Amino acid sequence: MDPEVSVLLHCADWRGLVKSQVHVELSERFNRQTDPVLEQHIDELWKERIINEPWLFNGAKFRLHSFTLTPPASLLPQATPPTAPQTLCKGEPGVCNMFGTKLQPQLQPGPERDTCRRNKALLTLRLGLTCYKDFLGTNWSQEAGELRRRGETEFGDPLALLAQPLGVGGVLRTRDGQVVLIRRSQRVAEAGGLLDIPGGHPEPKECFVRLCNGKYHHLSLLFIAQAVCEGVCVREDKISVELLQKREEAVVTELFSSVCTEIRDEVNVPMGSLGEPVLMGVALNHTSSGRPSAEFYIRCSLSSAEIRELYWQGGAEAHESTDIVFLSQMDLLQLDKSSPLWSELCPSAKGAVVLYQLVLPDHESDSTKPTQNPSSSTS
Image 1 (cartoon, helix red, strand yellow):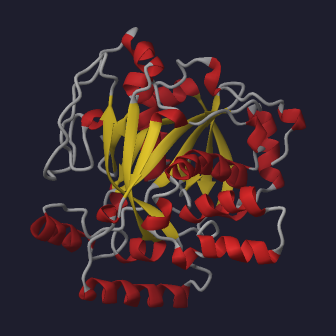
Image 2: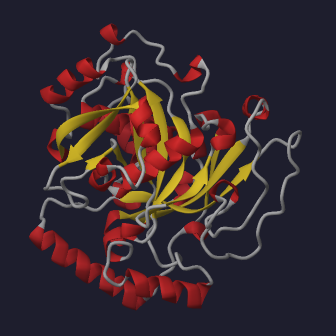
């Protein structure tokens, strides 16, 4: 595999997982470890960065600590959870936790896959909180290698001192069987000029915004202020694991909906034309010290020609890319390190391609197809 990426987790046995099959567990135990010297280093790097790039702002992110993938008891015996962290997974990514501990054997291709999907196999993501500032000061820092060594020595976990923010990316398939790639602007922080899939990060603040809008949208500012006091609407700097622990379902919803939001904002595709996201797995970007990204497969009811026209009209984040490229599903399946196009892909796109080839989410029921008429949808 390309040294820039590896697969931490794949869902090939189910051809991907839908939202109802994914749970989250939130705990401060899953936050990054730290000390005063490291915090000073992070603060200094951040101050330098915002002097040169004053448009940057900090924001809370979810931190992926580990995961468990539990097939139904009717198909496989449940494994005993690991008691101590080990090294990162190499070889069987679909059956490992964040530290590479084997949980259970893979299912063989065949009818068992569909049976397993009906029986609701569950993935649990163990999440803490981190932020963009911490990412720049750890994963993206020149000291990342040393932080990994310290983490292994002091905590038995090479990732303990790293931010490890969980990203999302979407393999978007058009009605006529094309996959959407966008060429990143030279002005973005990472991988400028390379081809990518639409993506970004699930935002912890959205878990509160959605609830606040749903419960208080019809009330006065006085009542909204009360909602803030109740912890339903929360300022960015006040978001905590304790508050999120009461809203696990909202966190899962944000994880799955955030990839559709990124597609809307970056490609200018209406949300109503997008099908249900299917989680293919989690890839690691080793150009940023193993940063994890959940990669999804999404069907779109629009053709490549319609999407191209919408893209050039410009979306909310049109400044992040300079061109749109379409690749056939067959070409995507055959894409590898020997392909000329591979060198044009940024690490996040490479990880998504590898997962797509492993999971083959196209062999799926109609449940992942968009259900709304795009002609009556709005972005």
